[in-house]
Image 1 (cartoon, rainbow, N blue to C red):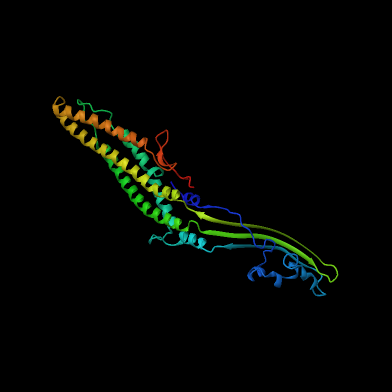
Image 2: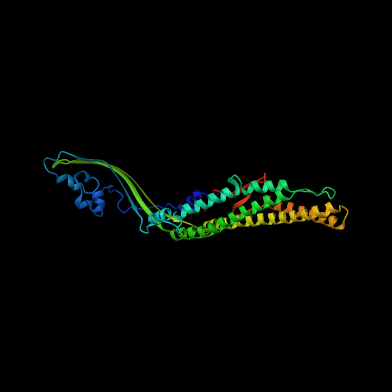
Length: 327
């Protein structure tokens, strides 16, 4: 099913070139706190970076000054995108005692267990029900036991009802989640990282200083596109459509079981009667209908854009997209 990776891949950062207004300034906490006013306030070791004139103003007892390493980082989050994501990951969602992302994850896990992963999954029940279906009824020996067929069909109906409860919850949760992500889309985040080192040897006659530094600047925005939003919202609808197809299959199976019961009664009383003949013909027609519904399930596929959300593989096994290709 859709795991957290789906949420992770929905958030793409567009890295853009960033021009530093003061590219030679060090990552100096004191200077940064003073608005990068190091020209007036820097220490002696900062002479090669802020103000070379500091080399000529040292005291007589100052032999040298050194700073190494000097490491720092700056992050600017004017639109509070980090806090917003933290709220998504931690705030209680609609009194579920879970944040929305965890609640979303729980629904997906439940749906995965119902459909394919659980010990009594829909996939297994479908195969069991298909194995129970007769290929025909012999009017001279009509005593086909439909109880197992009816029980298996009823259990499958119950599983589908549970699945549709989950899809209803998924629809609402996905709408709320994608609305939040859409609200965050386009917000900027920028920052810089740096490492510096410097040594200064002051003198009234001859002074020298050397500095080394490296820095990286980044900026970006989180983009959650309309296509991404549509894809996430389409998951619940696709699985609900599959559930409806299963309902059609169980309805056809229940109708077949009822007709077989009637045929058992009529043909046991008189295999040559018109009632028996008509009911056997109805059974044959309903077997064809039931087989068609099962084949429709085995070829079921639902897509959103270029992504197949739910479908079947060459062996008829149910396949649900776990890592959609979000833009």
